[in-house]
Length: 253
Image 1 (cartoon, rainbow, N blue to C red):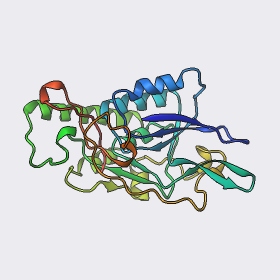
Image 2 (cartoon, one colour):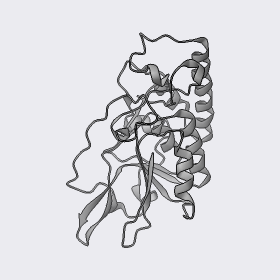
Image 3 (cartoon, rainbow, N blue to C red):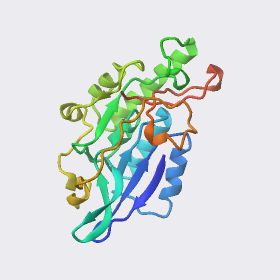
Image 4 (cartoon, rainbow, N blue to C red):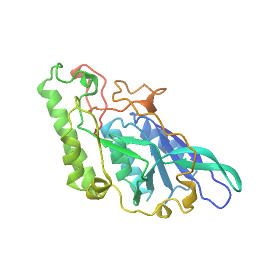
């Protein structure tokens, strides 16, 4: 995942753009990004297809400790009457473990144009053909362990059990489930309908004339797939070396 500070002059405090797949390096990279910055109470704008479950949990806990706010969108330059400046295109995707990063925000706003999608966690190296793959008892232990970690995190962040229920009902051979406005409220992913609570200058969100982003694909099989990380979503569970594959952790469909 890539982190950038987006300044939006004049009269705007800016925000953190968080884009791409969460890997084992992401918590450390965020710490490096945050060093020397006063990020307490800042807004994180997410555009991500998910990634490692355990690293996403670690990252989400860092964000909650900082009292960060979260929303979904893509940072762009847009023309306003006052001239060109940074803005946010709400037509973005938050999928798989990104949904749980969204949950880490002290206040959470999901714009109408955003796509928030969930699915089960799965072994990342077997998600492409999950039915045909074979699984060991240790694989099942790993998935069960990570579901437990995810459940604890969900409740610690103030999420509802409905989020886990909706996610864990969608296997990897089905399309990701896009949460409706009602489900966003039911799961407690969305805590406000007021964009000003996360982005004080409301005109920064939903600028006219911005092209919609292409629908993302479903899978990523490697934590090193950085160049295409914004165009693929993950379905993975943490794995260890004996299982014979590089795996991440993520829930969403």
